Amino acid sequence: MRDRPTGEELLACARRVLREKVLPALPGEHKHDLLMALNAMSIAERQLHFGEAPERQELAALSALLDESFADPGEANRRLSSRVREGGGDPGQPQRTELFAHLRAAARQRLLESNPKALNGAIT
Picture 1 (cartoon, rainbow, N blue to C red):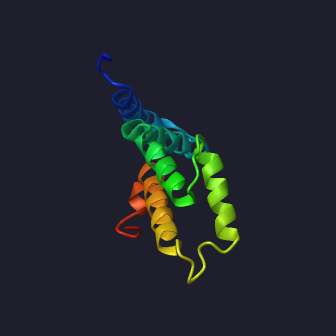
Picture 2: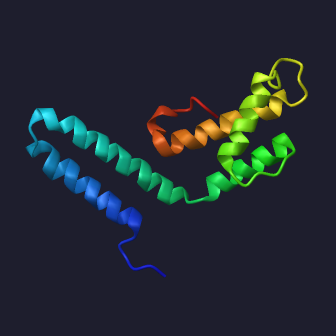
Picture 3: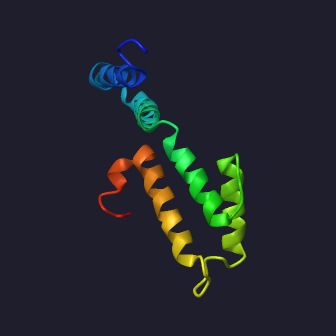
C-alpha cells in the first residue's frame, strides 16, 4: 500500500500552489508557459486516475473489431486506420456501426483525459 498523499494528490497540490501562488507573481510573458505546464499536470493526474484500464479496454475492443490479436494499441490503431482507408467504414459495410461506436468511445475517453470540459454532452 502506498503512503498518502498519493501521486494524484501530490499533483493536485502542486497544481494548486502553482496556480494560486506562482502564476499571479509571474510576469505576463511567462504565464503562458506555466499554464501549459499546469495543463500537462492535469492530464497526467487524470491519466493516473483512470489507470491502465482504458488502454486495455481499447485494445480488447480493437482486437474484437479487427478480429486480430494485438499487444500494442498503436499497432491496432494503425490497422484500424488502414481498414477505414480501405473503405471499412463506408455506408453499407457490415462493421460500420461497430467501427463508429468504437471511434466514439475512444474519442470520449481521450477527451476525458485531455480536455473533459470539451465533452459537455458532445460525444455520448
